[in-house]
Image (tube, rainbow, N blue to C red; front, top):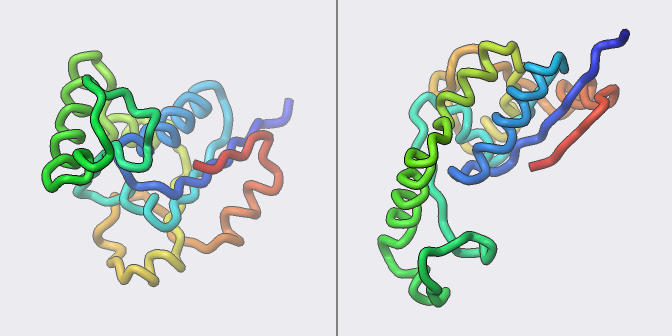
Length: 155
């Protein structure tokens, strides 16, 4: 039986958007898929050694709020920090694994993580800012794998 392949493109670097690529990637790997995740633009933040991920309700009307809150209030200074701490507390209380733990599961499951070299250059990142094991490559590197993938997702 031919090995199944799962390709993911991760473009967002916020706390709430960090979960889908790592949850889906580690789960697919556990189910026997060969998995590659291509991190580009703000998604590169998910590969940094020192994660400082935030969440905001702005631009995300589906985010459940403990009470109705007008957009103007959500834009006030300090609200992003409040929303981030509330989300982290809720995740901890519900026993949700941290982003770091999920990322480590992916590493252990041999999920290939590719940092977009063009974006690294664009934002003038140093390769030393990223976790060990990350590969650096362009779109062609990822597309070679994704072109034959059984599932390809953009996040």
